[in-house]
Image (cartoon, rainbow, N blue to C red; front, top):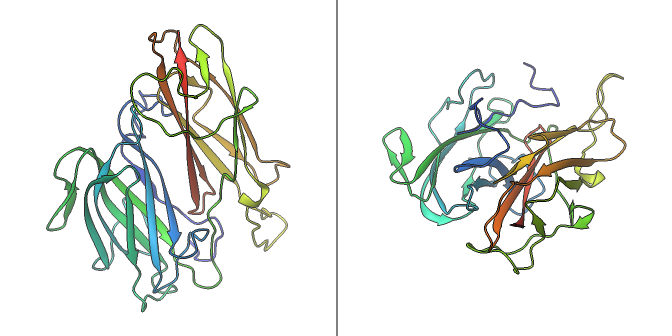
Length: 302
């Protein structure tokens, strides 16, 4: 595969996403839904240069919300041509073990200044996230000393001065529920009635979710011929802790005149008297290594 393609191969693997029996969009146990790589000092940029510090934030979701998670992760150069499972082709240049201290675990590491993007264009982040637990490293093995273990791997390209990519962004106030603005709220646990969240009835019908992606989220692409797209495609994955979403993801094609996603959500047929907190997660990807994610919630009443 040529180094000069513009739709770069992104290997992003998470545990629990490939079971064909389960509905992909329903969160029934801890799962990793996304990762966002940001260059320190320039969070819009997803492709780092040698010598820069990269921050990788992970979105870990569970029915009760985002679990506090530890991790055991390493970063290394990966083969130019990757086939199958992600692997290192040289000793790791960074590794970290973390206790369960964050709801959005973050791995920060500095890339070696002597990396040659043309010789080693790809870097990989491999290891495990540990929902409700701490990470451990034993020799070459990365895992969890306790908690729900979620193996992960993320494959990214270096910025060599020509190939670079910015993270797409949801922007401000991007989501509506039934044509009303759906804002993020600080969430607790337990009863949700009267907390200021949108309240919907279990006895009602479907509800409409609309997501407006700013036009700036779609970067222009270099066109070498008329068949090449003029800008990126985007994909929005959507997840919920209860009920049924119309589909697991939505595509925004390069020639779409507007980046608008609309889908329905069918609530469960019953709810406790004090209300059931239902959580939603939305992950935006440009299919070239850039991503963003946001969360919302509502209260389901009888």
